[in-house]
Image 1 (cartoon, rainbow, N blue to C red):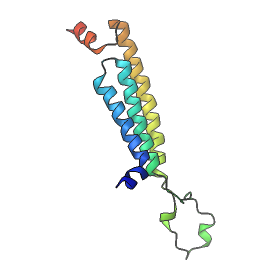
Image 2 (cartoon, rainbow, N blue to C red):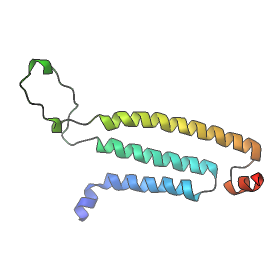
Image 3 (cartoon, helix red, strand yellow):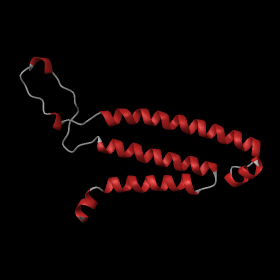
Image 4 (cartoon, one colour):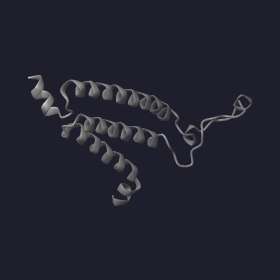
Length: 126
């Protein structure tokens, strides 16, 4: 059991990063700290998906001269799956976009309420 846990250490690191980000989003009252927590959480998810797309001994799924060997059987298990990597490129773009929008909103909140603390903003709204 211990060998299994140690052999999957990268997944445990991603889980720890996700929980740190989740705690920052839920537990902190400062809006900038919440944004940082959101980015940590998103980065952990991206790292997780990139790591599950890798395979020991795998190679790139590029077939050279495949049209000349029509009778040849291709072993799909010997290739790395590129789909998680491609999807995570899109996730990175979304992450940067949400960061930009969140910072813009936080700047506008700060200009209006002169604070970034959630409790003080809620008091000012009421």
